[in-house]
Image (cartoon, rainbow, N blue to C red; front, side, top):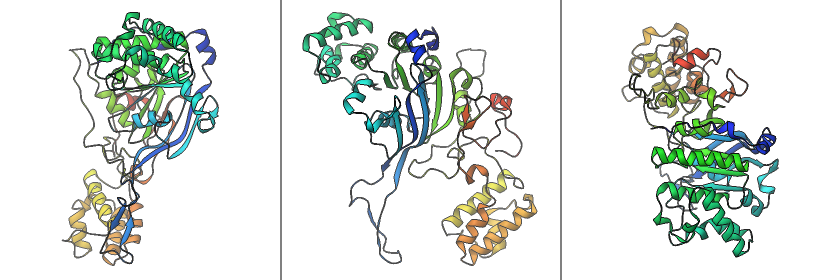
Length: 446
């Protein structure tokens, strides 16, 4: 279900916001946040009795929730970050605000490194609206006092705090007499208005919204989004909006970043992203949006399979295990390349199929479609199998790696795609937007 577009967020900018626009308020470069799989010294120790040498090792594997994100957010603008659950959106938001300590990378706020900005100053200039309006409000406290919390931290006097809270209640569409009520006395939409009032209390420059309308009725979603755009116009706010709902970001965002498994795979102005998707993942997300027109075809998702583990992401392009446009190298059919991929995986793990006794049986087991493989590719497979059978695993692995798809060989970086403001991270060609629009693929891809 989508949100009705009542007005364009970008058209509501005030003069002050327009003057500020063009200057990045928030800049993120190479940001990473990894969580250790095993926390604590003893939990990370493993014992391998079959290991050569010392049998005790330390497991330092980690969940790569955010793994190298770059973007710049202009003052007075809104960046929407979209993607499936578990792709790292919320961790990105929490890391930017300092609720999580970054593993690597740099965050700059208003031209200064964030770690050089006094915490009190950064807290005053940045606030967060959390996903669940129920759990993010203390049920034992009156809403007026909740709204006043940031002001109390900033040293405001009690009478001044109260008056500010009363003003904010009115600005977010609630009555002043609600000041002494408790959160459980309000609906979900009203609680989210209280969250917005608390975020606005100290007049921040940046507000990070993590799923701000998730779980609300569509009509209430529209009210909250309209309120957010009105407040942006009035105060010149800068928003970073995290959402899995594409209709939400289409309404409120100036630019959209599509996130997959800890990385941005496509970034573009909102209008352009919804008409030109160059990355297959972005295209699949758009194709899965329900169409309210009964005469139009229904939802047809192009994705299959589960999202890979963030602790062991796929090599090369992280989306290649689910990509409908996976590039098959010249000389292979799709079926033959699947066999090659199984062989490469087993060689990497130093263990061939138990039924393999010689080169001939290995090729028959892994690539029964060998006759369809080009001569030079076939020779490489034969050489790799022979090397593996002789115990030369490293050499066999290098031989097979030379034959692999570019989707597996190298992780693509964000590059300009058809427009200077549009970037995508994909090995597919960006020269034919018509292919991106239609979702068509060329021969030689699966």
